[in-house]
Picture 1 (spheres, rainbow, N blue to C red):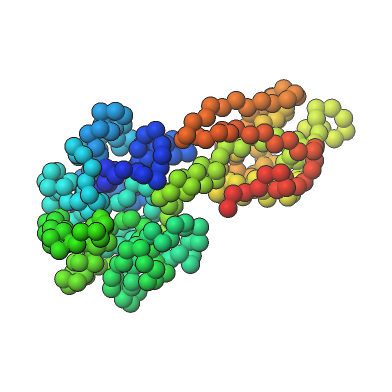
Picture 2 (tube, rainbow, N blue to C red):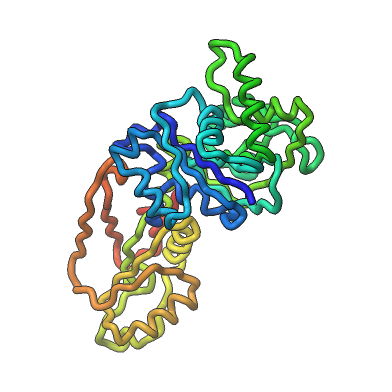
Length: 354
């Protein structure tokens, strides 16, 4: 069983937030740092260590927050101040927490789903030709493959291949990592900038340590503030009226009423399906009374619409949404879109996010 180290002691200079970015809340209510490791095989790890600054522990009760997020199963390594690099943070964590044997270092600013079937030296990457929405590619580290699974090298901020590292680094020995870090540090020239984890991996490969490659099944990058806001946009909560937006309008009375067959507005339904596919929540609102819930749900399921909840019995009147805003939920934190009744062109008013 290995150790998972999550370095959270960086300066977060690209996130001008009130609090450190790893303490931000993902749309599903989990912390960024919690969501970052959700796609990994957590039972694989004997220990989970989150490394943070003393300043953040005191100011934001970060150690208590981590304990709550991980159900008390994560250990906390507290540093007095900033280190010079992520690789130094990992080395200090290993020494301070007595980590031995195999371990994995995972960045806190991205979601990666990957099946890690064994311990040892490995990298998890993604082919940017398949994952085209990755931004700021020039700031990534690029993996050079040797065959299908072998890693020939990893190069920082130079597009030497189509495969970028997703921030998941596996090492077969904490002791060997610290030794490699010290060797790289001793020969590191001033002015070259920080020592990245990719530099340690490249050094180990040069010393004949073999690394294998794992392709990420899913990858969501939060390296830039714009990346984070893009996720928030994709995972909005949409409050959608039923009659006149999803199905052609009808009411309680008349020959065509709520007991009649629902007539779909097909284009609008396609737009709503796209929202759900990208992770948005769809809350349906309708004046139909509770006794019509079963029939409505059958109609929605027949047309392939997924929903978070349905609010029945709404007043047949203007609907107003009130929400607070802050840097983590930027203004405007709620919007209103009114479309003509039965207009089957919802995409002209509000479309799916790229």
